[in-house]
Image (cartoon, rainbow, N blue to C red):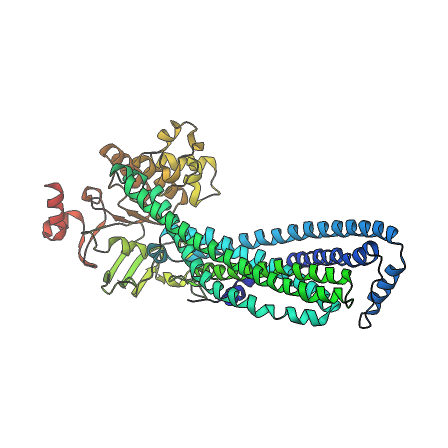
Length: 601
């Protein structure tokens, strides 16, 4: 998706709409500031012509009546008294300009920060609504960069840039009006400067747009490396990978530096070229207008004001050229953010989705098949099974058989490419995601805990739970004793991903979280595979309490944990090749029997 800056603005303007009254108010104060600035500049004429040279201000026939009346009044004033009056008027104009700038900055910064907040909120909300497959294909650091760095670039352009654009155009309009009022012939000559200024702006802006995209990509790479390094710091240290990671980061950081240097160099050149061209025009006007002053065709005051107005145009044109470059850079950031916002979840609620009643009978997989979008080979084929309420179903098989994929269809992390998943005979695609997932508890091999207190982690799925319910869930999960020994008990902060706890303690907290939620369906994915014998016994006891009376799907490579299952499914190549109780499958002498022999040999 290649996006022009104008298109990016149009697509992102809805974020500015809620803040439009404050934005317009800021623009009004901005215009007031420039009007006072113009009035301050206009005082040059009476100061030079009446006060310093004691000449009369020439009145042009084409002037508006108000301006002619003002010039006639100034001509009648005593130069000494007029000097004091001009000083007081200049002070009042400066005060008005200062107040205008204060309110302008206040309103514009409020709008800028509000837009930044709204874009980030929308982007994060959209990301949270995307399906699981999106996150398996994206690097976490890249997504972090979109929410942080790219949004900041857009905010600078959408609010600060747009506000500054209005301000500079106002300044250009006022100063151009002054020029044409003083001498329209000289003013027309200045228009010849516009093509000379516009060409480098457009050409260098196109280059800056490409470099801007590169800068954003380099920052995304840095963020991705940081996230991976901090998440895998234990592996990095264990395998002595610090030098390699340092070199990777150094190269990425240097590439980001070089891209920024190219940006700064071209933006500096853009401003310099604009200033030189405008200054050359101003010097030309100095020669042409100076001759008119020497010949008596133009007063010294008017010429001084003309030159001051012309010089005052240099900074707005220079700033407008820089704003064009900023907009080109923002187009790349907008493209990256809009790509995320336009990504639709592959798993969506149907328009007429209804809440799912609490499970009463059981779960059915009806000829289910599944294939990942990026793969041509099916992961699951013709899976048909029924699990009654309260039944414990174990799923075993070699790696890559499709075990985890099968249970991920229950909470609709993915949708089957063929067949149906039914709960009490109702297709899960016809019910609301919230009511479906509220009935499912998941305990996985890699338990994810949050950087928060023990209490908050247990109550994560049931935030309304009281203290007694949290403690009861912890006791049922064999977690209360070790929690009581922590420095602050249930108020102990356990660190990111529960780093301050052992593997068994983390698993028991995850089980307590599932118990407190009171689900009707449980998914246990290798929940005890990485635990020592003592921890496994405690976790296994907690799992037995957790699965009692619930429909449970247990994935396990450690076959000792599935012997008590009501039914064992053996998957191979995405198909169910055997099913039955432990003793029957052993007697059959198939794949399950071979797996047991290999494990217990």
